[in-house]
Picture (cartoon, rainbow, N blue to C red):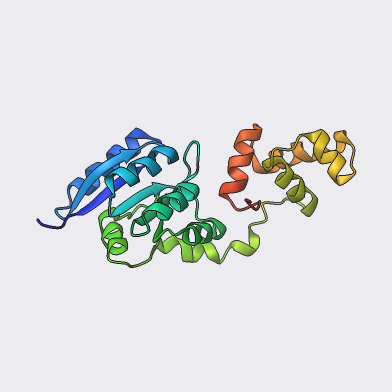
Length: 209
């Protein structure tokens, strides 16, 4: 078939890429141009392969799917990026669309029709997962139980500040900051700072410069 839609798959899990590849290889009008396992590789390969559609995982090691999307579109503004995510948070959806993604669908959707989504973004349409409309209704409840002070401290943690630096900035004791940090991790069910940073960014709890 002439003029097949060329697709690049970006996901850090090879099994996920393989699954998506199998789904799309069954589509007569779609061809797989290549695969990338992280954001940096995605940016490089997008420049080399010039795929029409890029199926981009939102959460990637190194630079995130959002950052990779911005970088790819700077060099290849015609690329159509379809964001895949496990997270239905409205903030993330908005960030993805602001970064230039043409669509946002949930990886765990039972009725995920990847071929149809690829065709739609290739045709210039915006594709949003049907579940997202329901998710938006919940956004008023999504404060994650964190107080304004904890959100403020979370922002400093994401910015790479130590407890001592945060304490000096907010005129608190180091011990108080440590307690706040522990409370934040407890509230979110996270035990490592690196995971906390990723979670906070993914779920729109902090602003990214």
